[in-house]
Amino acid sequence: MINYLDIIKNLAISQLQKDLIIGTILGDASINKSGDSKAILRFDQGLCNKEYLYFLFEIMQEYSSQPQPTERIYFDPRFNKEYRSYNFSTKSCTIFYPFFKLFTDSTVKTGRVLKIIPEKHCIFELLTPGVEKNYKINSSFFISISNV
Image 1 (tube, rainbow, N blue to C red):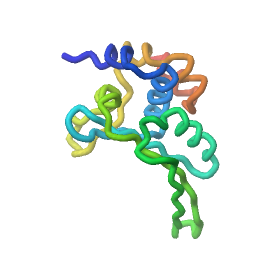
Image 2: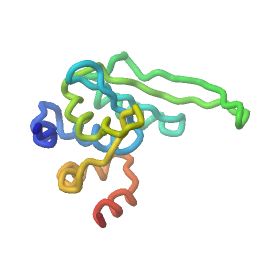
Image 3: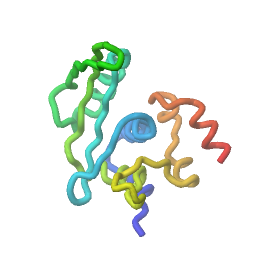
C-alpha cells in the first residue's frame, strides 16, 4: 500500500506550501483528481477574504493555471443581493495527487468524492504550527481532533 503521508513529507515543495495546502483542504479549498495521478486545487473566497486569497495566490502562483485570481460577481435572488468572490485554480499536477489521496474518499456510494480528515495518527503528523497559525483553521477543529 502506498504511504501518501511519507510522499507528502518528502515532496519538493516548501513547508509553507505544504502547510497552506493542508490547512486550506481542511478548510474550504477543494481538490479534485484530474487524470492519472494528478490533481487540481481550487481556492475561492468572498469579498471579505479577498486579501487572504491574494496571499494564497502569491504562495501558490508557480502552480496557478491563471495569471491572477478571478473576480466573480453573482446575484442571489433568495436574498436579493449581489455578491463578489475571488478564486484561482492550480494546474493539474502530480504534486497535488498525494494530498488528493490522503484527504478524499471515493469509496462512498454517493457517486461523489468526499473530503475527509485523514486517520488519527496521520493527521497529527500533518498539523504543524504553520497549519494552525497561518491558515484559517478554526481552533475548535484542533480541540475536537485532540480529543479523538
